[in-house]
Image 1: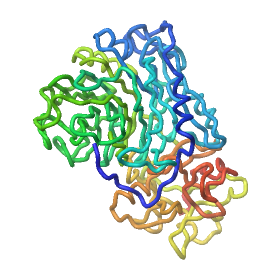
Image 2 (image 1 turned 60 degrees about the vertical axis):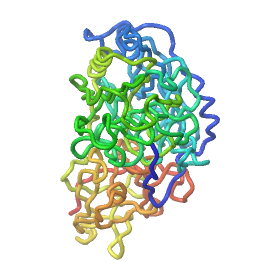
Image 3 (image 1 turned 180 degrees about the vertical axis):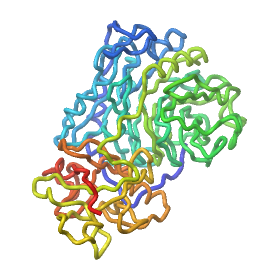
Image 4 (image 1 turned 90 degrees about the vertical axis):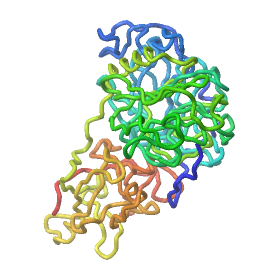
Length: 535
């Protein structure tokens, strides 16, 4: 699908590494032989992280006669015999990479390995490995019909800590797609082409979406260009209404078939495709000669509902299909990269899976135990807080706005400080204006004004109601980079964190183009103690 993506006023090259090196690294990661042993009675992964033989999604698809030809997940193995790497991360501080694998054969991701490797810095996800053994790994998307914001027109890579989750009680991370972020493989093996049948599912964060084009996972053009109707077949999730939509205000699960997001047989509106609101969403699209279907359900409990099953769209160019066999994640077929979403796991199959097979896969997803992580840092919506610097130079300094202008700085505040200074260093925690799972900070003494970034600098401004303001004023708490308090990740520039530098406040990456990106003391400068409010 193609649409000019909404652009912010600036871009940051989040991934300044040679794409060829990433592609070379992605040659590793085929599934290793072996089977699971200890398993829960329901066939899900047991407490030790090992799955019963034959119990995981790609085992179930194989049993149904439609084997996986691509299997991607950053949270768990998708074969009970898999004990290879799930994904690779690259560290900002020194450019080193590490593969993140499973705790045990057929088990959950070893998130502790990522946490240790990325401690006191940030990491990007450079490769999402294909567990099928066919080498269909996902790496940084190259430019196509649209260019990305990273070096050479490539898309950005996902910040590795931006989508924490628990699965079966184990900590894991998803792939957080902010606008400008995307993954692709244009040289695949075994993926359906032409009118060949295929199926696919993805487990997504049902609360993270936007109206940009296009948050997709699935089959796309090998050129990165829009080559016409029917040259794609991918799962789409979001609330754009340009090409197709369902009931309510969205978001909807639809199929991106190129030059059309379809919610049923008709272009545009189809009444049977409902808005969905599950925190964790299973989305399914499958297609064969003159037939296709959309199915979806709650990835935490219950079965799949069929939103459409029938003939190809009644628009020229989609029967027969002309699929090309590339794989995309987070972008459209022509590299339209204005979308947002979070991906946890997904597969593509050879052959048109039966509903019964998909129902068995959904039961396994339910049993996997996806859950939202516990809140970090004591930032309770509705509470008032002050944010204290933790760098050794500045432990009496608090984040505040200036009195004479709107810029944010750090400055000392004590019990004897003037009331105006105390009020300027006090913030009311609000649900994130751009992402309700994160937070926004309303100025205590300037109601209606929020902390936001503008050209990297932090300031307080009145909410103008725009989507850009809402994103600029949204920050996602995670454990402090130096082990103290919280670090506050920018919602729309997810490799940037709230930082003080020379007593001014910015969003900053660990190393980069600007002075405030300096690696010196970055972990300390981006860690904030949540303190009692001064006012």
